[in-house]
Image (cartoon, rainbow, N blue to C red; front, top):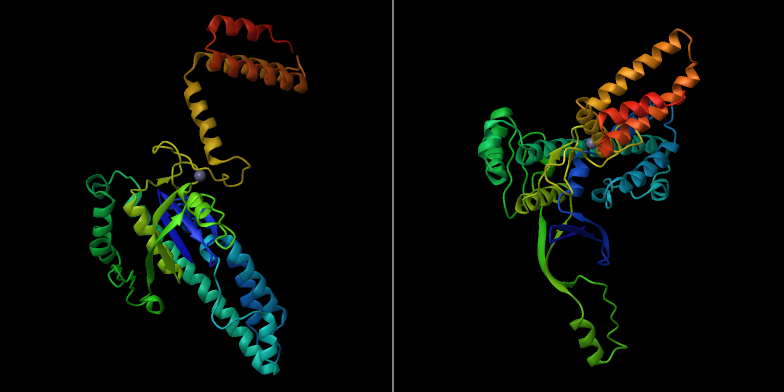
Length: 366
Ligand SMILES: [Zn+2]
């Protein structure tokens, strides 16, 4: 996968140089570390249980191979980082059944397929957790001494050289340029070294339609002269680790601000003001975004101290008690409260005088 970082934007390009994803730098990384794997894990557990039978007595259902294939294709769509995702020595169900025909052999192969998949996906989740830790450490603003005294570069240096060793003595977090290396002494031997190759390219940033075979030299020069070009660094990443480390470095280099959402707790990159408190994701179990919920919360907090709200609540209680003594019906009360709420909101927004508001409130029909 090719990634280009230009003007605070990250572009992902496919093999034909088409831009398939773009966003402000770090966005894909933050989305990755906040990805929810619970559904994938559930499916994996089921597959694992299906394959975990006594293969001397029973045959593992062949449908598992198709289920694995389906899970992989869904997984690839889950995030841009997984676009090229594949698992070792699995080339699809067709190839699988054309190469393995003997039933005992198939049993063994299916079992190893499932275990390879679950191994691979748990590796990704580990990576996710590790990068979440370091991103929180380097980017989030907390009241701790480290965060008050150190800037992101200093925090990063502190983290890889001291913090990680102090917290988990066995684990070694070692990143170095130009190898882009993460080395974990025990747990991560399989990904101890990898590369992210960097090259330069002067590339048109506008829509650019050129056919050098059909165009004259003059037309070609004219078309180029009207196009905006930039010198880009293109980083080719072959592994998920190399994508993550590249992203992390670019986030540091570009001074990216990361906040933690006050509603859902997930990390996000603020789009407007850097002190934005709520993310733009759908809030858990709601059809509203955290930002929308945050706006309502703030409004309510602000209006709590407002005399209009106080008077509204007093009247509301009064009306409610009338329902209990059966002076008005539940339905009448409901209709009244709708109107009263509307009036309250308008009064707050329009900065209505308290006497005027009270007068209107008393006049509301039941
Ligand atoms: Zn949120």
